[in-house]
Length: 129
Image (tube, rainbow, N blue to C red; front, side):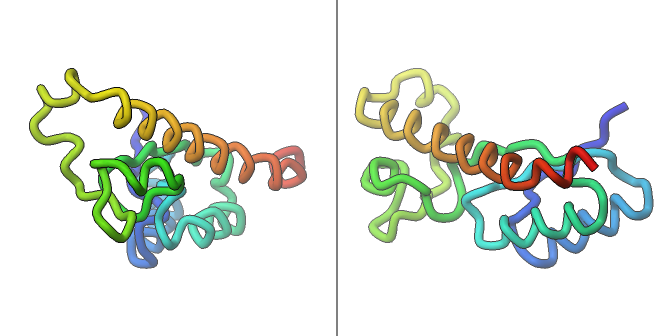
């Protein structure tokens, strides 16, 4: 059974709670939001506590600051480049996205995936030990 804790990297308190859950055996996976302010801290916590290999990617299009200029300038974000949190409401709207929004989503998802993969690349020694 997989028990996943979402939103790793969201905040210090979420990171600490997820770490405690791993240490107590309450969860066996987590997913990191690489665009959130505490994402780098989350990765360090995972490395230092032996669960880095159990961290997946949480694609995030609803909270925090977008990683790409294209997305920050899209209808998904406010004037500060932060997600408005409206992408998922109403669900029917996701089926009728204009081409500019689709391009912004593609760029943002790609950037988040690349950030996640680069964190794996920099930790290759950790993973092979």
